[in-house]
Image 1 (cartoon, rainbow, N blue to C red):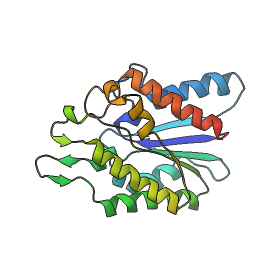
Image 2: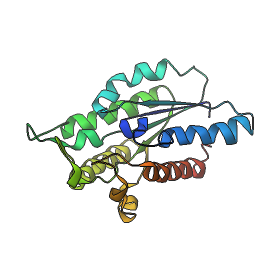
Image 3: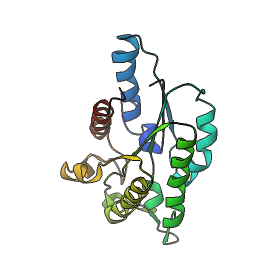
Image 4: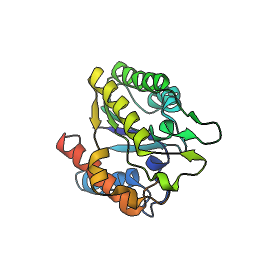
Length: 205
């Protein structure tokens, strides 16, 4: 693997983690254990934007990808977005992103990844803490519903998905959230360990 491009929202960006978030933790691991220790040259790009919707990720995806990927480089793309699309705006009582637009966004990302010969992994949605919702209403019912839409699209288009929702629910992950959706440092550590383990199991690292 030459490059790893990670797209997502504020959780991907690393908000509320004293170590910089699960993506930064992953990059540190790669730098220490592969790039320095084994003279690899893997570049990790954190392309997370706080407040990101997957419909916006879809719009910027091709330009972001082509500005970083060279023709012969082996590139892994990771998408960690969708929870913001699932919530309801309490002021309008409307879904942030319709089901149709949500599915189209993921389909577009998958199609572009295949067009440019990238490996692609989509990370499933995480449990939320609805009791801490304010202007935006997050619920586990909606999060799970939208997570199921991701499963539907990844199954349909033969794309890899990391399933996290039920596993994290069993760990009472909601107790590690500083608000409705953002993990604290312990939560980011769990995400990092799960995602690193998956990448190692699938021989990406």
